[in-house]
Image (cartoon, rainbow, N blue to C red; front, side):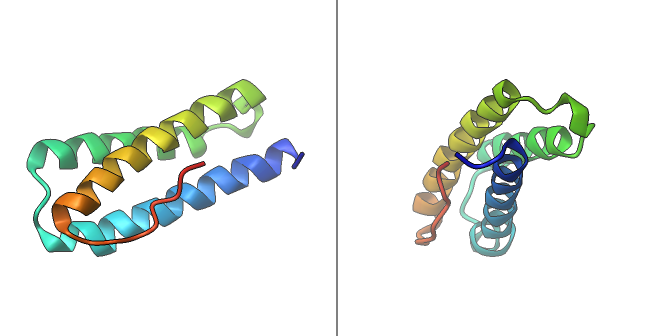
Length: 93
């Protein structure tokens, strides 16, 4: 099993990839409704806020919670891709 620090870095990389897809592929299509945009943007805000917080507070349990939140975000992005009629890899952890 990879180290805890490596798993945190992997979660960050996945989130960065998903943010890139959201900003550069899905949103430019302008087919996602405002309420979905708000939900996805809020999830990104919360996840980045946590990932940018104090390193000492990051435990294995916190990592699992982040991974679950990233999976929830992935399902929203999958739906947004469908609505926008684009096909991309949104990565599930």
